[in-house]
Length: 128
Image 1 (cartoon, helix red, strand yellow):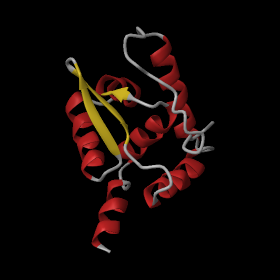
Image 2: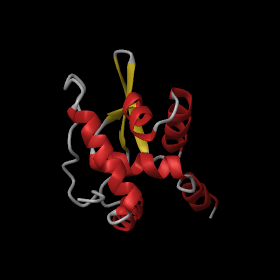
Image 3: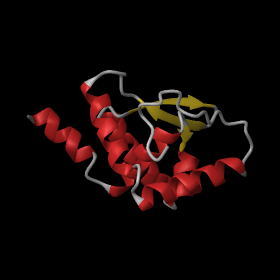
Image 4: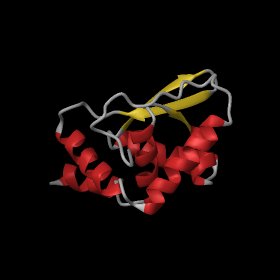
């Protein structure tokens, strides 16, 4: 039960939920994307992303000076099912939809040098 408690604690924060919702929309995002869309500082973004990383929700990679994050949930796993429930809940949530729009506007107005790819897994998409 300790493992499950840690998993649900990782979801018990609005910033972390928002980050997961954003990652369900795009395959990979950098810290600067989270900072802009969520209107948070770099330290707050990094702290919450590290929490999600330690809980096993995301993977990271360095690209030059930037840290990029993507979902780290294996397809078909219990975690993927939990993420799907979250996606279903957030599909019609007004704040989640607003975040999706804000992210899309932000990405449309910034250089495509960053590899912002849509998540090819249709089963893990909130607000689609």
